Length: 321
Image (cartoon, rainbow, N blue to C red; front, side, top):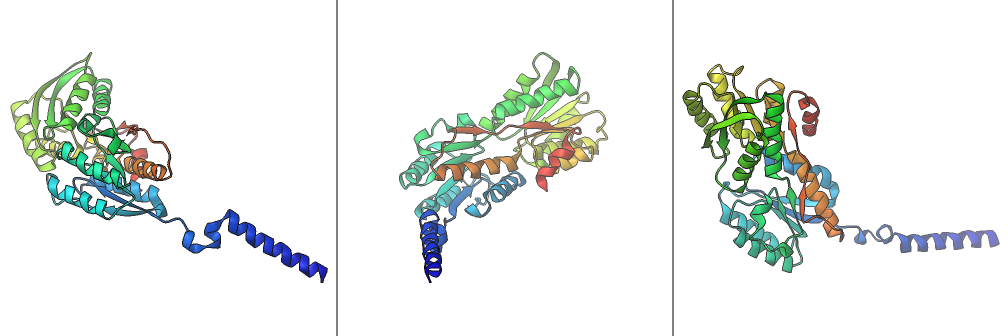
């Protein structure tokens, strides 16, 4: 009987200790709840879908993700309404990439911060954030456009010789387009490469193709086309191939989307500055989880980037598995 009493006492003590040490085990209602996170990119492009894949892969079951894009890249007011609705729903965290008025966005971020919501920027160049009060957001996760483009310019000098003529396909006017031009041309310094023409192609493939066709006609001695994103570069590649100039005119882009890496694998694009969008999404959601748990995060949190070409494309393609 004494032995039985001792066993019962030990069992009771064990249950009590479990309840103290692991209240989540003792009471299912106290299990950790998922973080409700809203992410609002400016468009539903391949680039942002890769970011989303990084968020869902690295967020796992810690996050309930709300992902919503406006109907067009320029639908700024629609994006603001999306964010306003999330603030009213009192989500745990909100992350935004915007092409709109940052002063107006700052007002929304202020409201979100005052409501106790952790506010983040995603894929925004640091100079863009000047109108924003830094007290209103936890962190801006992305990469340095200038440094990325500079690395690509340096790659051209190292891998395509010391001299040549370049055409640049520009995105729509703004910080991203300016930094990607300035960085690239700075990367060419010390060489005999010259930019002979710069024309806007609005970040899209079909205009990249049509603008490149005009450039090739006017510049028969061109050696390289730099598209400030992969979409424009892929359009330019089509123009180059249509004219039978693939062996004469190299085409490089910037983003590192799957279509670009597929093209490099097939001998189409020569290179892409790979800003690893999936890694950006992973970094964002990791920062959101850290922030929710009271951790410290850099105010500007840039990921590392690199150039993808034929030498490393097989390894870089694994990011899409």
